[in-house]
Image: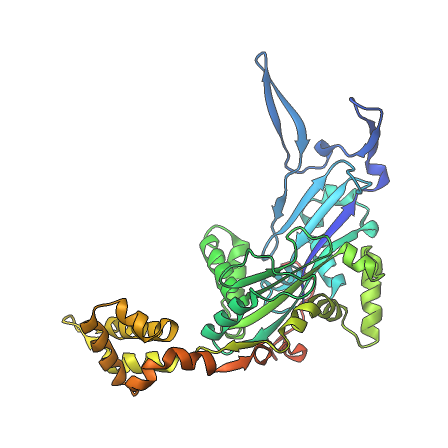
Length: 409
């Protein structure tokens, strides 16, 4: 799936002027921000009772759409390798088109069209001054997912992957419980990450719920994200995201001017090839090569916990069911598994320890099994990691998926 596009749209030559710099002999191209009809910020100074506003600029802005906003910023001067003033736009085409990015289209043309359309609707005066055919693609995100069986396995897999490194593709180190990163944060070549999509999705859905009372776009997005079919589909998806930069494309002789890149993708599509999928496979190949032959201990304690709850739940005086003691027993079981018999015994009072052991044994685990639990756990349930991390390109969308069209609601 095409998850995000970052583009730069320069101004038409007729919209800019060549300005001589006051403190140098150099001149540069510049556009007058005050003529564009956009909100501006500046540095305010006070001199002799007079107020002066200097260094006018346009800060990054979130432009509203039918669903989630897109980010854009006007750069009113040429700078470094940017030879002309222009506008940067960043957005997820999938979110703009359908309200979520769990799955979606791969068309760069469709993604660029919807982004440019919302910019045109938001600031028509600004848009008329832009040289749209000269638009450059700075980067885009290609994403594909593997489906994991449950939450516990999902957390295990992502935590294991935080240590995966291969060649120049090194783990970045600033990982989180549900996300792993590779490559430099500011890399000009590519950036890679893997994360649990259902966790991110629920956080975003909650954000939309909080905003929906005063934001019509958020209300629309929340309704889309609350579709029971979507909530079921997103469960336990491990998503691999590859951000490919302009330099990465140039090294492979892929055009970066938008109109040329769209034509390039469509030419490959005519040959039965998916450009976004091929970019993703090339960008992530080091990660998957590193996973070859790797194994992971599969910790499956759900049955033990369920048995302890069934056997040792109690009814309180108020008539409510309490699982607190059963879960205390499960913590002792986990301690035996992680730290062994002797260390667990020394960490609590002997009467409590042996009472817990006796109550755990009532669920079918022998004392001998509990004493060897730590050793057995090191040798049993070892599975190839790629058993879980299988990206099926034919199963990235549900059967009820309908390709979105570029429309404005």
